[in-house]
Image 1 (cartoon, rainbow over the protein chains, first blue to last red):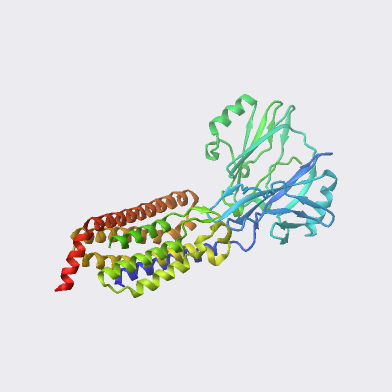
Image 2: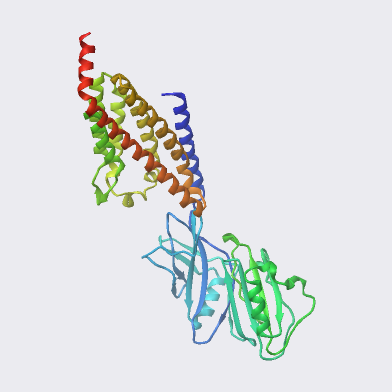
Amino acid sequence: MKKWFLVAITLICISIISNAVYYEAKQLEEPLVINSYQKIRTYEATDTSITLYYLSNKKDNIEIDGLQTSKAFYTNKHRTDFELSYYKEFTHHYLKEASFDIPYSETKHVEEEFKNNRIYIRFSNGTQRVLKLDHLSFQENTQVFHNRSGAGYNLSTVYDFISTDQDAKMEEFHLPEAIQDNIQVKIKVWTNKREQYKEIDEVNKDMKKLNAPLSTELTEPIELNAGGAVGFYIHTEENPTVLKYINIFQE
Amino acid sequence: MKDGFQQLLIGSIFIFFNIYLVVDILPNFLGYILIFNGIKQLATNTSIPFHRLKIFCMLMALISVPHFFSFDNIVDAIWLSYYIYLMDVLKLIFMYMLFRFLLQATSKSGEVYPQTATAKIQRWYMIVIIITNFFKPFVINMVIDIQVKTGLVLLISNLIIEFFFLIYLLKMKNFFSRRGPHLKIKRAMELAR
């Protein structure tokens, strides 16, 4: 065989081997559950939902079947055998969503089980693993504010608005230490809804355009008049390994 | 030589088209057997040795047996995941050997057109297939958007050059069917000398 052909075959073999090695190196040994800080509001006589995000290899397609505690099994609402379902697609992995409905009466039990590392994630391939999160707790609904609304854009920016029918004062805003990495919060106050919606349209999805201070820059309590609203713009890193979904609590 | 190229053409059509109705209705291994027959006929007409090519052809027929079955059921096994790459490399080596044989065979015919046509298709086929085989493994590690586009470009390039190879075989078969009697007389005269 001529020399040029041998060189070509060698290069092709190197390409195959190196890409195969790289591909295998990127495969996860088991699905990776994304860490999160969850403080979930509960409402009497209704189920509460826990949501987890996890990465699984594209070629394996392993899903979370459910959460197992010592007393109950909570099925993943997004589990399906019929078609491939994922939240986002990456080169080698799928980011998937798992949600579990916890009855109001069982939230304390789940919280207790979590503290004692007795909640297990059961996967579709028969394996199971202890659920490890930064925080998981449930809080009774004691909100003073009304007319809450919020939304998220492509996993990176979330906003939450709280409006009030009466005068109120926000003394302090703080982020728990466990989630301070890669999180920025801008706080904006509006006196009425018209002003609020106008600015939302202008800012649209760009956190940088919002003319509002960062939560770390606030030095004084925020005063709200009746009919006004305060908006929290929460920006996270668009990276699945540090994905964090946040909910605002009034204490 | 017409019959030889005809067998090569039919065999190549079997390999080019993969139509699965439970199994491949144009089995690749049968295609390689037909190609083997075509090579044998050409070698007999031109007295060119083809021992190595013969063995490689049979090897290709054997290795392409799994291709007879639909890939969806068997590709999950880890070692079969890379079967496609192995087949591509072996096929490239086989085509290189086949082109060298065809160049010798067409030069023995004494006609200019088959020689230039064979040299031309060999050059382009080797260039395109080497490039696509080199870049194909990168596709599995590419970002999604680029993956689809690159995969499509590589696939279409492959299909086009394989199609041109079929056209070449058809032209050679037609050429030698028209020139056949003249070549037989020419060969007889050479043998008589």
